[in-house]
Amino acid sequence: MAKRAFIVHGWDGYPEEGWFPWMKRELEQRDFVVAVLSMPDPAVPTIDAWVGHLAQIVGEPDEQTYFLGHSIGCQAILRYVASISGRKIGGIVLVAGFLELKKLETDEEETIARPWLTTPIDFKQVQQATRNITVILSDNDAWVPLARNTALFKQHLNPRIIVEHEKGHYSGSDGITELPAARDAVVQDN
Image (spheres, one colour):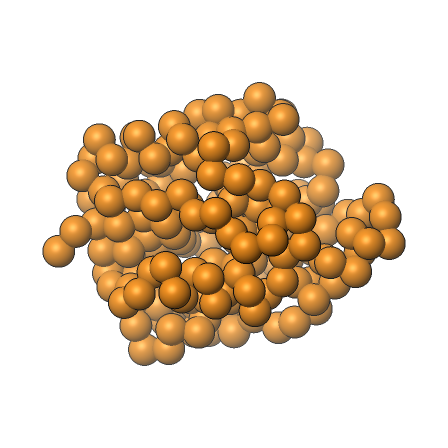
């Protein structure tokens, strides 16, 4: 059975951004089949479109299936995994993931983000699918309040939490083109 990894970009992201191409190469060198997804309408991400797209692309997830997400892509992954009741997956790596955000810059951004922040996630279903969850956060992320999100992730998922220094929001615009902590979180069990 092939090990598969699905990388989900964030809001306004794209497959060639930042650390995604590096991660794809790193995991392929370790015998993973890797897909860096191009999510629908990335400028205006919606829960139904993104979770539905994930479900369509992934097909039948199993214990050799891993998910790596960035920012709102982490939300999409959590919501997708919560929807696969009764199935087990290999693991989840959430990079700059959030359960709360700092105030966004425009009313339009607030409107887009609101459903992601207010629609409940079935965390019990996520934990039943895998106990292998890693959250990677930066101490200077402009959008993701570190202390609050660390506490919320611990409360809801009890993940392994890694806090890195001055990585911003882990975007290509932050100069992040490699992310060893995320790679290691996937390959440690393989």
